[in-house]
Length: 78
Image 1 (cartoon, rainbow, N blue to C red):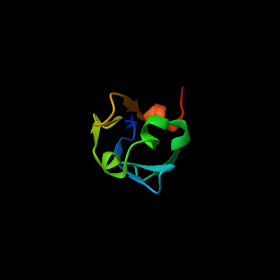
Image 2: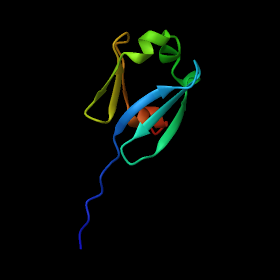
Image 3: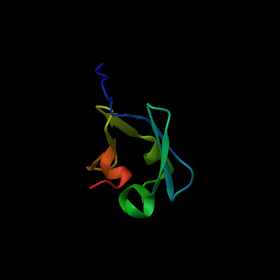
Image 4: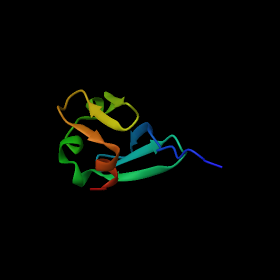
């Protein structure tokens, strides 16, 4: 029997405060991203943080930034 392994995708994000971002995945898991590792996201205003786009399920972009963050970047996987 062959089973397909599906990579989880980003379902949503939310911010606990100015230092922590939660990334919710489609497999019902959530992981915490300390924003000290992503100073450009940390520097965004509350309103700018709400203005994001999930691209192809595995990339995240904020309209106020030129950067695109992959799921592996956010998880700290090189």
